[in-house]
Image (cartoon, rainbow, N blue to C red; front, side, top):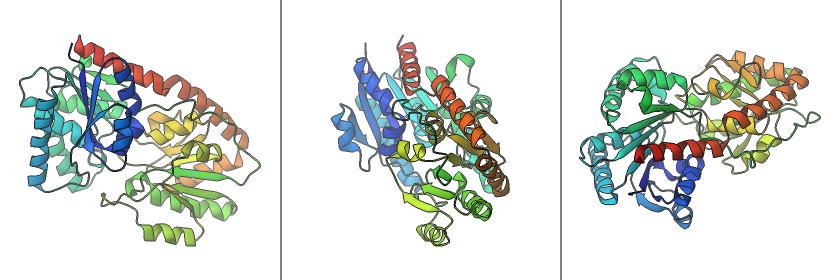
Length: 377
């Protein structure tokens, strides 16, 4: 049996953080696994784990029409050369491009399309987003018309939208909430209630992630609780036009609104040393990994009633959901948790149980391997 599996992903760091455990499990079950993406700093690390790598110059911020056509033809050559039995594409552009390429091939290749959030165009209301949404819907309809496919959704909102757009049948889709968290790495520790309150936000520093709302909420909360600390973790995304700038970050630090930690790899310890984890996103999320990790660490969460974000919490039980783009409501929710240590601790304990039941990475990995087995059979 041909057990050649190829992952097609935007960039290597996303693969390492979101899909590596699946690839390693596939190798242990006899699959030959190839990763096709744009590589930054993780290529040697990936190859040392036994995975083949192929460079694909995906440009996440868009590119010229000519370059995008070149990428499509490159993907077609790669798929024809590697002769995979399964193509597993993750995130918007790899899913769309892989689906289009597979439509041009006669080979009986199975397609796993992982929808890790539909992006900004499916949540924004401005004219440009509406026009882009129509074009994107047409691309999805064609790309997801492959006969032998499974579409993986992370939240029910995305599932509802694309099921209608692409006419996806019930047996061709599955809901898997996020990429999971290693419950041994992100382990539960009771919060330190004697310290000054620490509120942490960790993400790519984009406008749509709610960074500005987080900073404004910090401004309001500090008027009531001046000793509270607001920690911002992450780096500007220079490939995205909506990135927060380094100059803005330096201004917020100078105003004593935030403590900026930059890009970090010790997120488990940062969360364990915090009291509240916050993500006021209005981005087209799947299920944000950072919220899954926060729940696994047993921290109360404040996030938005945004598709994907609201799927990572039980509102009022493991955290609080507030309206999108509402810094006042965000500040009020944080203040409520600061004033209620017992409520925070109860939410944190409930969050850990929720993570154990819903977000264990081993369960997520097993679900993916069952999908591969189903398609091969």
